[in-house]
Image (cartoon, rainbow, N blue to C red; front, top):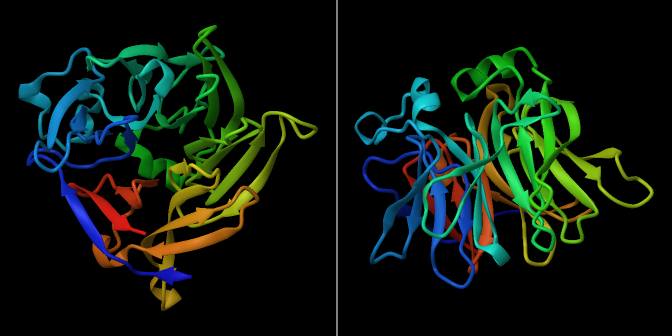
Length: 309
């Protein structure tokens, strides 16, 4: 079912663009997002707006980086993508495309690296992540062993399948490769009971369910087939919102328009929201339910979308 309801936007600071993911702080109105120039911004409500909370690159220069959209500066400025809190310890985990899995405490500032390799191979394109709150384990994607955001179009054109799904266990600091040879894994979301983790693959247009426990442990199923699936966010009741796209009619035009889909634990689509009215054909990276609304992120715009549900 395609629905349309009220939409508003939270504008980023004038020099910021490209919110990729959103992390909500527990018990406050604040949320966090990473933008294209390497900053992690903290939102403090409509009156106080955004402030710079942290960054991921130890060589980042405000003079060089602030406001940049040049992907060639990514290795200098950083590019924070997936964000998620471990609430019990108030840790904000960050997947930076160039610096791997990192973490920030409540003071913010420079993020601390926690994982930049797995099985002896560097993490070249850390992308989406989720945190299992009871254990603190972090599930995250390494999109490609060959390509980075600077040349990801080549990954699409060559059907690159060198991505991985990884798990970081903070108690032991161990990084485990759960799946490899994946075609462009981007988003990850672990189930509430940690029996499975979903991983979306942008190149193959599939979302996989990888079983962590039970008789199917260490195997996977095809969970969903979608156009350009991106980040996956679990809801408080245990189902998921996923950013994706659909082909606008007539099909011959092959024009993709952004959508958000609510999907239950067995892969059934419960709701589809067409976002073309507000995003045109710009892709979206995340749809997350919070505070009676869907918060929508896109690396191509200068705002966070808020869609009332």
